[in-house]
Length: 87
Image 1 (cartoon, helix red, strand yellow):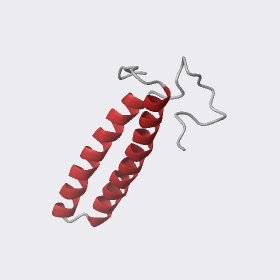
Image 2 (cartoon, helix red, strand yellow):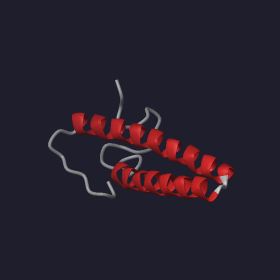
Image 3 (cartoon, rainbow, N blue to C red):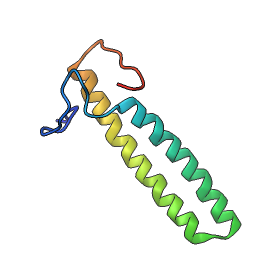
């Protein structure tokens, strides 16, 4: 079972450990920008930069998966509560 926060986190229910919605937005931006940069680098013939950007895009995808799992767990623990971008 996924929890909304780690057990030893300093955050509480009233004050979340991290702003998941903001993290989601930033990870989405990172995924899109790194994918575009990887394509541009590969078309320019700079393979090492394309690989580095592709690796960062994969890291962004993994981060999005973790964030989404925590958002789902938070919705399950607090049904009916809407969170802003910074909560």
